[in-house]
Image 1: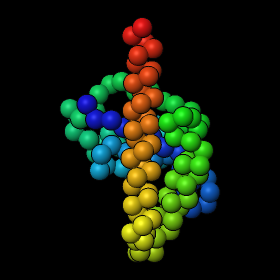
Image 2: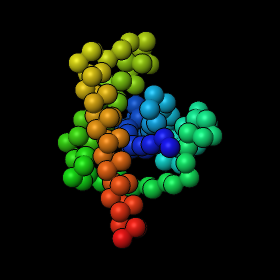
Image 3: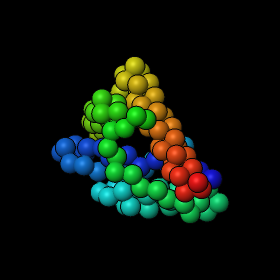
Image 4: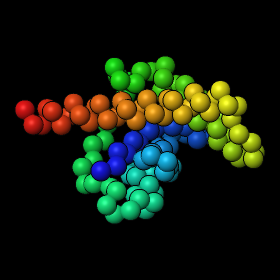
Length: 120
């Protein structure tokens, strides 16, 4: 089963939108559901399972407020660079990739904790 993370981010106007991520596939939507729908259209049927847990995206012990803020800043920089045909600096791209990976691991840890609560 593929793990999917849905992150709240800001668009170029500072409005909240959502990015869904599964491995190397990404999508963006005005709502978490829209981002998920766009992502699932990119996945093979066997890649996406039916268990879906949606979190309120508040900072927690897995991914804190400073990390969320920095991820949002870097995503805004990435969109600006993309829209102008540029790329982030290598250091910024590495930092962005690491934060996305950290949030994905955090989402997995949250899900694991949630499943343990259900099983107990």
